[in-house]
Amino acid sequence: MIKRLSFLIGIFLFTFFSGQKKEQLQKQNAELKKQIASINSNLAKTQQQSKLSVAYLNEVEKKIQLREKVYTNTQKEKKLIEDEIYLRQLEINRQNRELAVLRKNYAEVLVKAYKNKGVQNKVTFILSSKNLGEALRRVQYLKDYSDYQDKKAAEISTAAKVLLENIALRQKAVKDKETILSNQQKDLLTIEAEKKTKQNLLAEFKKNEVQLTAELQQKQTESKKLEGQIRSIIAEEIRIAKAKEAERKKEEAEKIRLAKIAAEREKARIDAENKAKMEALALEKKKADDEARRLKEISDRKAAEEAEKAKIALAADAKKSEDSRRAADAEKAEARRLAAAKDAAIAAANAKAAAEKAANARAAEASMTKKNNDEKQAAETKAMTNYGVSSAVGNNFAANRGKMGMPAYGTITHRFGRQPHPVFKNIVEENNGIKIAVSKGTVAKCIAPGTVSRVVASADGSKTVIVKHGDYFTIYANLGSTMVSANQQVSAGTSIGVVGSDFDGSYTLDFQIWNGSNPVDPIGWVN
Image (cartoon, rainbow, N blue to C red; front, side):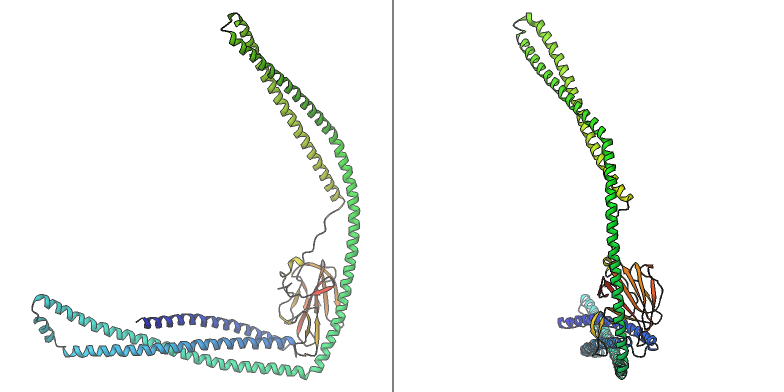
């Protein structure tokens, strides 16, 4: 029983996880097929535009890779189905054995029931009981025996139904496997056909190698010439920027000098106005301190007199019982003591008021000092503003690295740096940026705010736009037409121009980013 239960749990778990895995593989294949359809759509567009382009070859190669991934996923799915068929068959065999045992047992029950099938036999069996209790037990026995027969029949029916369901699932899995095998065969034929297409393209490249190599070398020569122009333009922009910065710093220094003079004058005026106030406050503070000191001395003296008079009054009190004659003197001494205490309290209150007045004078002096400093700082800031002294605005191009969009979306056919040509391995390309193959009519967009530095026309009829972003420059080359002009302010997303046709018939944007006079890899800057 435990073994059977373990087997059933194993099949359930395999079916569950196998179903999840198959569903995942099917989703991956659906996504891959979408990508293949997209590539086919692009190829249908570019096929009429280009005779032998690297972009077209790259798309074919990418499509082959995607088809091979689909084929690999289908192989995995087929293996899962084969495992499912195997386990289903094991379960069917086990259920057949169980069903045979159930049918055998049920047949024996039926034979026994047939032998004792008469109603008279059952009645005789009950009436032959020795007493009523035994008769009731025999009636219950016959009922239980009948229920047992029904239960065994139901077990056989249920087992047969489950068996049929498993057989149906196995047959479905077999059909799924046949469908997958059929699809695999079609995929293999398609992959072979596409590989043949790729070989034909490569053969065409080889057949036209001399012409294409010459055109490529001519293009590289023009690219080098354009690079020289770009370097000259950037160098001139840097020289102008440095000259402007030097002039700006000189003007800024002069503005700062004049502003400081004006600020010093304003500070002197503020100091002169506040000097008398400060002297008056100082005199008032001195008077308050002197008055507080004088009143404190009076208070201390009064307190000492009070203590002395209290001492005398105490001595007089002690002698009252001994000398009634001095009673009047004691009363007078007590009156004097009370008067002295009153004078001391008044003196203490005056001293406290004088101390508070002195403290207020010191606070007023501190407030006046702070106000004086604030007024002088405000005068300096105002003078700087009046003379046009301000901080230069920093460049935020570098801060947006990785956050800027692509100038055009398509297939990157050539990457940054020194790399062998994708087809002609004897030719090495030096790319100062990336090349993006796009469909006809695609418009290149500016990737960040800036100023158009120059629009350069090349000998082959293409145009290049150079945009300045502070210390950085972006280059949009191989444009058929432009939509901006020199010194124009542009924003991120501003249309720069329509991408032009390359020598191989494809439409390719040559995009570059320069940090000063050094080109950098655009990948990582745009996404």
